[in-house]
Length: 249
Image (tube, rainbow, N blue to C red; front, side, top):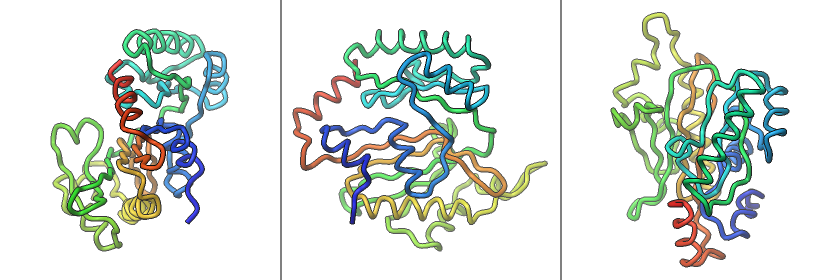
């Protein structure tokens, strides 16, 4: 089966960590809705893209060496005009260069602020015994606090996916509460099935995380994504160690 062009490019460069932009491009090819995201290589381009998308926007650092962008000051939310974009761009790059002086910076990603929805998380990893597994649960900071998640072995079928959704403690949130309308469960089932198929077809994907995914009544959108691949053909252990050193700054 023909591999995704981005994965081929990453493997050729001997990289392990994909940027958010690269991860979202792969998700789009897999038919998974993602918030529209563009890569800006300089401040002027960031302002131009922001104007085209419409304010407010979000800026995020784009680097294969920086995975946890929020923890390192690599995310700026709710920017309302060009001046705020310029200021945020300068502050973000200054902070990142101080903390990660050896990191490779590709620029910043620009995306429009997404309408808030119920936040869920979908992730995959490789278990030494069972192979690829998939996780589903409440997303955002709730996943760290409540750890309300379910797991299944890949590949999934439709029944597996539905059971994953229904067995989390936060399931009532998806059924509608107070003035919120219930979520159409088929959109979540389809998301889990598409992620399962993506991992089946691309076994070099070691880890994948969509957090948060904003869920609305009859649609959803992945707002943030990260991906880790195994480069068994081109990635030496020395190269892997070098990338880990870069991540630590």
